[in-house]
Amino acid sequence: MSKLKIIFLGTPEIACGFLSRIAASGHELAGVISQPDRPVGRGLRLCCAPVSALAEKLCFKVFKPASRQELHSVVSGLKPDLAVVVAYGRLIPAETLALASLGFLNVHFSLLPKYRGAAPVQWALINGERTTGVTLFWLDKGMDTGPVFLRREEPVLASDDAASLFARLSASGAGLLEEGLRKISAGEILREPQTGEASAAPKLTPGLALLDFSLPAAALLGKVRGFACGPRPRFSLELQGRKAAVQVLAAALPEGPVKDGPPGAVLSVVPGGGFIVKCGVGGLLVKTVKPEGKKEMPGSDFLNGLRLKPGDMLR
Image 1 (cartoon, rainbow, N blue to C red):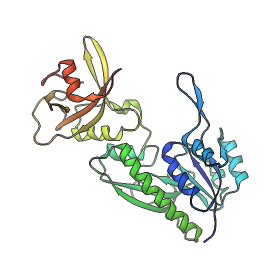
Image 2: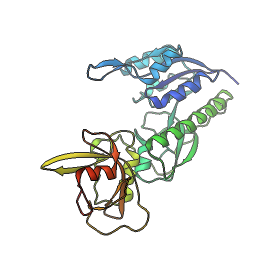
Image 3: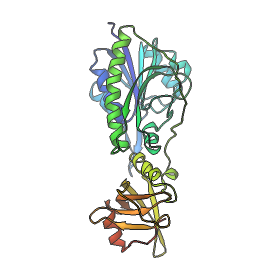
Image 4: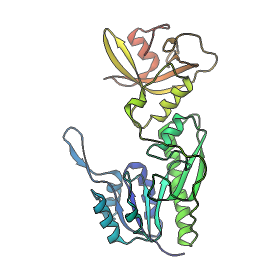
């Protein structure tokens, strides 16, 4: 078993567990690369990314290149055997990928080639997938198109939202990365072309978060689950001539048959819980909401506060 000289590229909180695994692996971690500090808050105070903060706490060299040229220079100077990438947030040019003798190994939260792109976990939930997983693959010049090293499946539970599924996939992916490092250090390196139908997982935008009650209830539930991390799914409500946005934080499909009515109609209230709204197909049990400018609350409290009743319409 040979000791590897590794560099790690990552930025958000979800990448921190992978950095910790590499730090404890016994291999040499030559440097950590993250995105530059960003201004946050009203005072626009510069704040470093979670990966940068953890690396500094662990006393590793941290680099925050602001351009492709800077990134190339940093990687060239570190001369790694292997680079590990988890949610770095930037495409890495082909000439930089060539600087690691074994290559750049990326952790992606789907079973490639399904859900290539920035939001694979969210889109798996939006589309109602029952199985997803983690793929270790070798970066090339394309967007998540490189050859596969290892992969591991993970069931999508009915109770999952993006946060809970992210957590399980992160734990599974960290274990898969450990397995991959053992295999690489033993000389067992696979580079298998991706096979199967490819699909895209583009970044979520606020426009996609709108809930259209003319759609099937299952499709709206997928949005509520998938948008648990990011722009919240919402519907609009007009009260006394003023439109307000209402975020839906938790929802479910109601048990039993759903009454008939036009899409957007409030069908019934669940005391102490939520309310059922008619959709294009079926109904959606809205359990928790956050009205504009207010705290989150049970759906039933929301209706009672506005004196809405069955038969009233939501948009």
